[in-house]
Length: 298
Image (cartoon, rainbow, N blue to C red; front, side, top):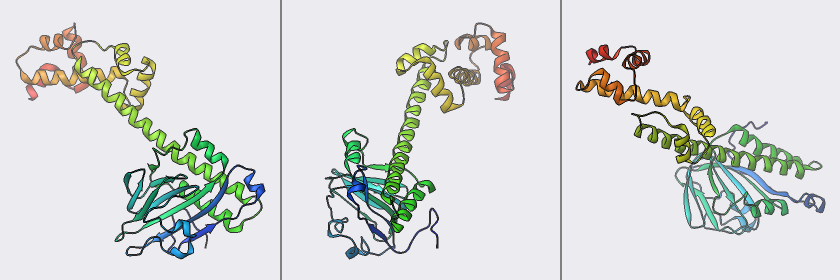
């Protein structure tokens, strides 16, 4: 039966691959690929004796001479490396780098489903030297994605047949997998960075809600250009900084009007509106009620 992305297999699929001198000329070779469903209550790794001896101590701790990428799509467990411990959940990915002492296993009562691929070669070591791989960052929350599972399945399909140049196709799949993981992580980090920028900008605008918005000043305090600040703020909030700032003024105006100890003219002046009538028209446009009517609703 053809395997579809996301299908789980009850048995381990193991491939420890041969490679030729011609394959090594690529500067990269795939050494192993597979997936396994580990049911609850099963000792890890299952089918232990089917693995070469160097791979069997995964649950106790080991060091490998080559690279691996492990992708968990079901269950939960732990991963430990470089003195750090991580909780593994569906969508977790970890990179095993040459010489990195590590251990991982599913929670015994829960089990998990894992995909793995191993590889080596000078071009992969070049990625390590250039910092594309890093011993400081070996654990990622990539999430569950059919296209990542499909890449593992494609590599497995290639190595099953071992047709001419299957190593080339397998390594192309590995590079695609690396690209998926790293770009997803980078974009996720970018979104988090957007959030920090927007939250800082909101704080600065709230602190100066009584004045006029100073976009160059806000951008300078955040450390980016005004055009970039506008772009990020609009992308993250669907409003321009000016639109958000005016919304802040309306919210502050509503708060002041509720206190009833200031006239409408004083509220307008407090919030930087020189023209009381313009303030009243703007307030009604945004809230549906004129300032005087707003007070009567309270």
